[in-house]
Length: 158
Image (cartoon, rainbow, N blue to C red; front, side, top):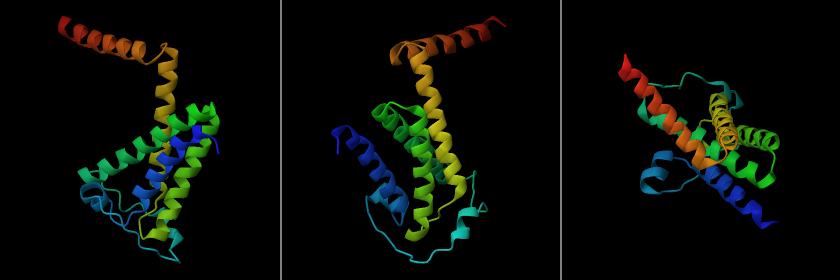
């Protein structure tokens, strides 16, 4: 195995640990790791949407974590294999795999989470394309700051 794949593998393992740990809040706040295995899960659980709670800060925080973690995975993988298209496909398949696997660990695997993960992948792709188009991270950052400042300057003139 080539050493260049180590960051991708380590990040993917972090995602697996976080998504399959029995209690995410215990992992996050008490650093407790625990797994509960269910050999015969109900695969129809993938289609549940009644547990979407956009009014819950914890729920929104977790979903932002989904998008961010898969966005980071995309960035690392795309840089490693030098192919955005392959990285998008592989990360999307991994997103589905993690949600499917959660059903076997007494977690709530949902297709809605796969869509959130893919959204994070897409945003990371768009962000990386923008940074490349702007000539790198530093020029992209400063051009964005200038655009934001321009919006505020236009607002003051009204």
